[in-house]
Image (cartoon, rainbow, N blue to C red; front, top):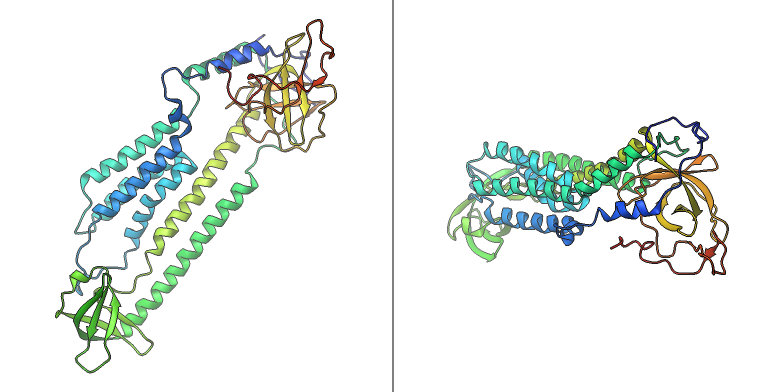
Length: 426
């Protein structure tokens, strides 16, 4: 393979002539460098689920150590917009880990100073060790994200492949990589719902605040605790008694006196626990961050695809079969021809199974995790994502050595071996 870069025309022709054939043995050797020797494979595949479990545990710890000061008329319990946003930030972390580990790490890192700034305005504080857990979670998500990337020696092998191969910048396809419709719809819906809930909670909180300010405040006596979250009140002026929900009935001993806001519209609210819609901001924060996380994941994929088309890529001559929305790449010459890669594309293709494979120019390194595409008859296809290993149902080219009954290049019903399967070669 010769080094160097050269431009290609819009039709995909190369001034230096056709590229060299792709040696399938080199591709298999390159894939084998991705085989881990010292890292646990289960940790790579289940990194997001590990982060999800750790995030759920972190949320449980928060609920256990969150300060709960008694509610009084002088220091009422709510509304607390900033506090509910902080709870939403921490509560979103497990879900964000499933969406994108790097985004979860960044949000956790931003949560630490946000929570510290909020606590400066409060009399009670979270324990210091909880912030150490937050920092550890941010670092852990970052390390797991790094662990899911290709091994360093594999990345070095890919760079070496680039240096040794003949290179050219791929022609721009008719449909360059763009944000997938599903991600756009999901992100937009999540953000729209979050904005709608935020607007509703702000309007509703303003209405009930005005209603409570206009209400009559009277004294009442706590008669009993009928349930774990209610108190029974009696009014000395002969009004009928009321059962009101409270955060903690133990804060209102039987026989104590409390102040209640009343009006003719049916308002019955303790002055120490004003009507509070701001817990809705916890859900708003979770939904908004999920929408941003979905968008960040899709944007990172699109940027990687567009970066692929802006930079010189290795060139090789290959043979391809077309599916409806994918191409199967075959490498090698003579008796050694193997299906080595599958590229899903946005273009609608005419399936070619059962016919002769078509010659094509492969752009990129045909190993999982790397972007790649092909130019067929002067048309460069637009990939959906990185290269995949071919499915076991991929059309199989059987090239006999001497005694076979099939001619070179014909489609064979023979089931492909482990090299063609999606499992990596061992």
